[in-house]
Length: 159
Image (cartoon, rainbow, N blue to C red; front, side, top):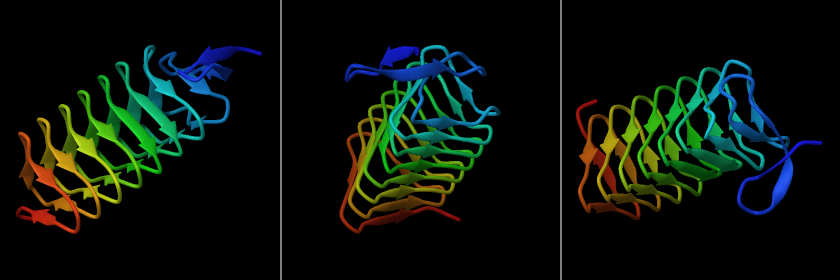
């Protein structure tokens, strides 16, 4: 049995044939997906279709990355998160809870997206911004800098 330490002690794991990154045996990664050599997929996370996990990115707990979505750099996707379609989570971004990132949305920088928040469409969240609670950022909206979008807030651009 091969093991790897994802940060909480060694667990049964294997290297993904498409990219060589470590995948816990409890996680599911499709053959068509790519997990780069320094990327990690652990717990019960799922990466499917043509999704890519690269750099030092981590997909953990029950998170799902699907479609042509990308998780890269030092990004962490954890919890019951869903990253789908052509969405990108990059930089030092942290997406957690039940959050969703979909469409062609980009979450990048030192961003935090948490709770039941949803970032969709062509929206971009960057810098040190926080999106949390039941907040929705959609269309071609841009949230950047030290902005905080929380509670039941809705930020939309042209759709």
